[in-house]
Amino acid sequence: MAKDISVEIGFSGGVSTSASIPEDQYEAFTKALTDGQKDQWFTVKAGDGGEFLVDLSSVVFIRSGARNRSIGFSHA
Image (cartoon, rainbow, N blue to C red; front, side):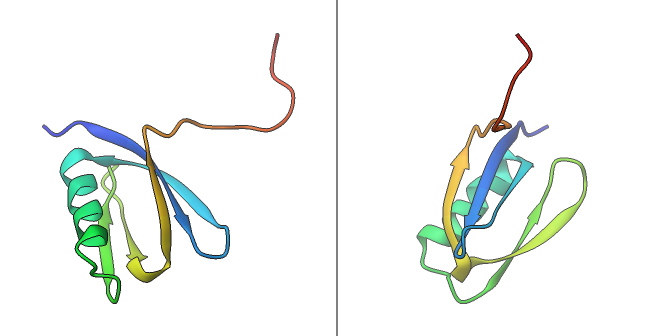
C-alpha cells in the first residue's frame, strides 16, 4: 500500500487547500505540472478515497509534508 503524503496546493489568487494523497498520486500530479501540462484538469485521488479535480494552469505551488498551521494563541 502506498504511503500517504500531506500536501498543500496553492492556487493563483492566494487560495490554498491541504490534502493527504497517496505517494503515487503525488508523483503523477507533480509530473503533470513539470511536464508543462498546464492546459488541462488533473484528477487527484485523496488518501481517504475521495477525489478532486485541479486546474493545472492555476497551481502556483505544492508544499509536501505540509502541517496544519494556525495563527493565534496555542495551549501552553
